[in-house]
Length: 100
Image 1 (cartoon, rainbow, N blue to C red):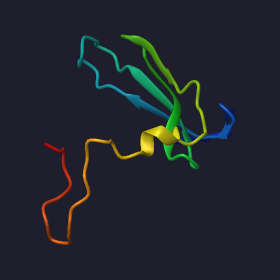
Image 2 (image 1 turned 30 degrees about the vertical axis):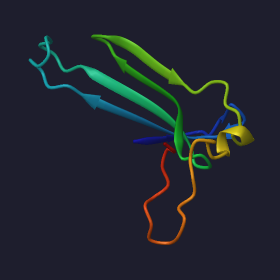
Image 3 (image 1 turned 135 degrees about the horizontal axis):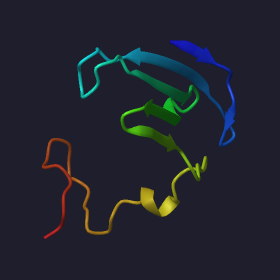
Image 4 (image 1 turned 180 degrees about the vertical axis):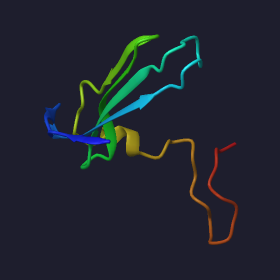
């Protein structure tokens, strides 16, 4: 693994790693070893992959990039308890569930 220079991706600092591997000769349709590479950029702040690129000469490149990242919290309406749920009447009673 080789560490890569940290770029700014979608306004986030990202840590990158580049790995290279070789397939065994005679495996997966090739008589020669095949070099396969992977580059992954991870945001330490969000703890998720923000970009990656895999390259295998037999199948080509596959890229992933996080887009339209929004750092705002969820809408308040999503945090409201639905009207059809009720509160348990006392501790130890049945858990809240749908009315009716």
